[in-house]
Image (cartoon, rainbow, N blue to C red; front, side, top):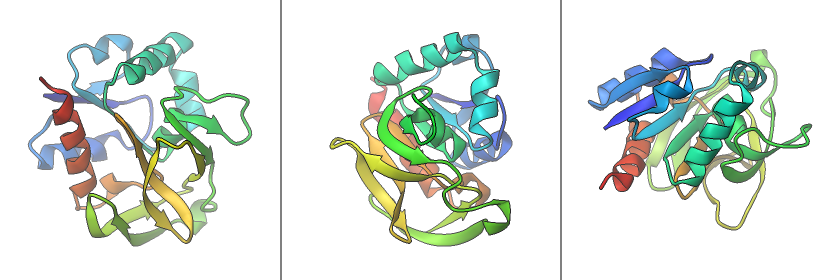
Length: 190
């Protein structure tokens, strides 16, 4: 099993470290060719607009097709924005892989960044979470399963093969969120 990490911009190294702690081989992905042979893909935090500009429409289209085929993907912060079907202030999403609407920077500006502990369904209690200009999920379809909330805002959800989080689990020593995603990936391997 090899899990790719989209490396257009963002917290790539930190996700790689989290996967290494779990004994999972990872690959940095910058082009469509890098997707070959992967079992899953992490879309890290960073700046979603910059990421979308760096990934051309063919690359985004390929990611959309992979998501629709059942390929496991995990988006954190900006990665969640890329995977959402709806982004407030935009007429359409980017990859549109999970039936959620998100509000960018909903947790505030950079100076409003914070850390907290979350209780996450299927993962556990007191999971450390780092929020940096985090988007929040403001709406979701009936097949989306909210997994965690903070101050009344949905901050983590899953729909079939797609997992998203508003926060940055890769910026903590706790690997439970990555372990959960690895479990999703293993479910798809024959």
